[in-house]
Length: 315
Image (cartoon, rainbow, N blue to C red; front, side, top):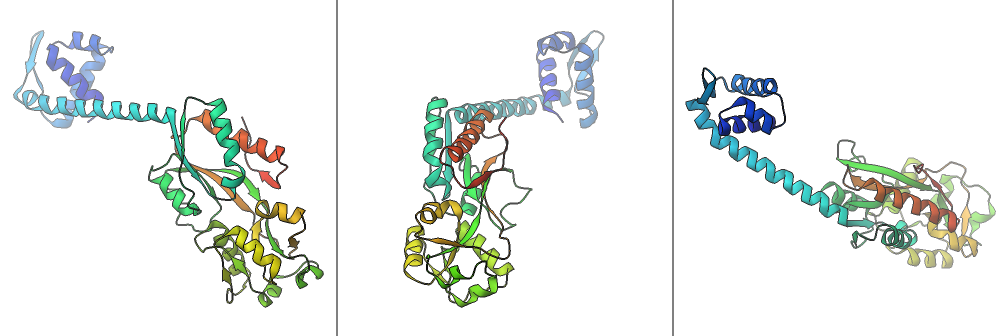
């Protein structure tokens, strides 16, 4: 049973004339007759009694009419509500972002949106630091979009979920330590050599920590003796003062590497890159907003000469 069938039935019941009802709905009389006939076939009863050129409601039609009216009114309310939500979305944008994206790109994106799309109101929610939580907020329509990092949890990034994942850029995931660390004198090192040193890592729910754990487990590096510090500045200070080591996206340590306060230790085995995505509900974010965001990300990478590779092509 379709909305068009119910709407046609109600219009004919109101006018008791197929031709006039068809004109009111801007369809042909044959289309109107076909809709009513199909509805009667689905119900298994006649809704109208035909008396020559005139018609009247049958007892089944009289029973059906108030329910058809209720259904149409409910549908119209739903359509109106959706239109209001779409109108609201065109004026408001709510999102969240994980680090390092939030610290590096977010100020540029906010400036670009304010300058190029001044009619929208922007709300940035508190950065939880956990990409999985932000992904679920998008999936549950609590926010319009989120800038999240790579994850190895297949239960989160499920193709059946109504969330579009737009890859923005990928970043090298590098092993770092202090410049005079014993590992720096060995050239490229293997993962087996990392067993002899304590490894610093962030809170276990962060994407950086999950990515690092995935790499270590795949290369059979035991996590015994790891030290957890849920602070990027805190980890950096520990690296500079101890023989501890860790993995970071290159963006996080680019200034430390440039100033030579930290050093990258090359690895024999290649390491999977750290990818940042824009997650949004299907058709929930206007295309022109997505384009502004993509262009701003690319401009920021180029202007700041950031060490990452873009993963999308601008229109």
